[in-house]
Image 1 (tube, one colour):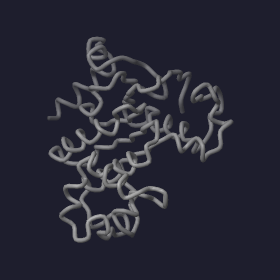
Image 2 (cartoon, rainbow, N blue to C red):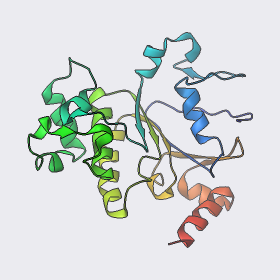
Image 3 (cartoon, helix red, strand yellow):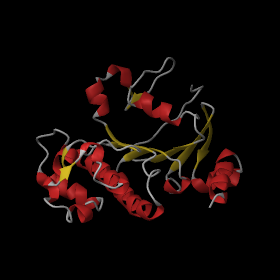
Image 4 (cartoon, one colour):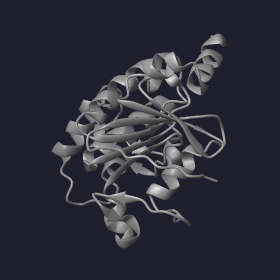
Length: 225
């Protein structure tokens, strides 16, 4: 449960959300997407209460990339297009190339027409994640929402994905939940949640200097390495 949480994300700003499990990070995303509504207070986009927007209008604003990538039986092309018949192959190919997914797709029999099994069973975790990035880029939503987008990949793949993320975030408002603090250190601002409250806010260096919750999370994570 969130308590007395208030913050603003400016257009084009990149904001990371961190905190221990149960701190309230995923609740924020559920509220932004109106999987359920706030019981008190309000969330606005451009000054408009999101409860006054249709779900279609609201969710078209977001490009969503989750830890568990949802792929469907079909082809590479159909998994990027997601039923949008107006999306051209040029747009799909440009998006795949921008996030470096074209490299592994070129090696697949059929290229864009290569078959994809249910849940992407024939692809690696990293390949599935790159496809999800390409999908978000192809739909060109103004707000990018990332939920633990690199937590399931190995370290070597993470570097490739981080490069793809930089492309994906360019020029977009970004809200990113992160477990690996390394993935959000370059964000414009980091919000630190603890037991449903927003406890700290600042850049990576500012929060380290405060020697508070973020510093403890950072030291705990890197002491394991």
